[in-house]
Image (cartoon, rainbow, N blue to C red; front, side):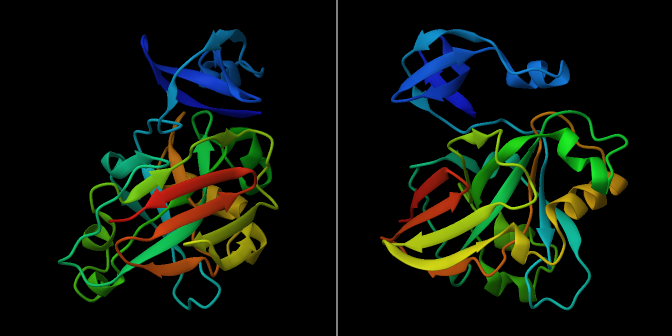
Length: 242
């Protein structure tokens, strides 16, 4: 199932995809806690927005194939999240900009007790994320605050795929229609399960929180005027940069 959120005349509501229509659904995080799929509540018209509103966004650093440093986690502000299709203004004062296509995991329930072998039981689904970055700032800021904190620097969505699993998730990146990466979760040195277990061992996560699992050869330099497309399983995230 592909679920997300839509802005409607009633406000932002949960929806699922049904062909070209949106079907209103109950809160899928409540349904997940009960061990069932969310119930339908009728068709609705609206515009897709960010697929979730997390309290916490965790990034996994040093999870590319060539990194020698130990894998670590870092925090990114949820206020940098924007919906698919939103134009993002690149900072002109932070050096070059890189789009990092990543698999984002949406947590479905509190992570107390999460282990590698049970990690899937805590996952609502996966979605696409563009971890826009200014890597030149890393020389001054190894904690990723300056390099990752631009307004709109976390495009997310538009859907959460609840059927994709976490063990073999494909990932592709295009810039202006040219493919720059065809990879997936199997190229990550630390698996998604291991990422989740590592994060949960240090800090609690809850329903709706996001873990960005790292960029397995899925980075591309971008400049104003270009459009980035990131595909994670069947989810396509589009980000024009200006």
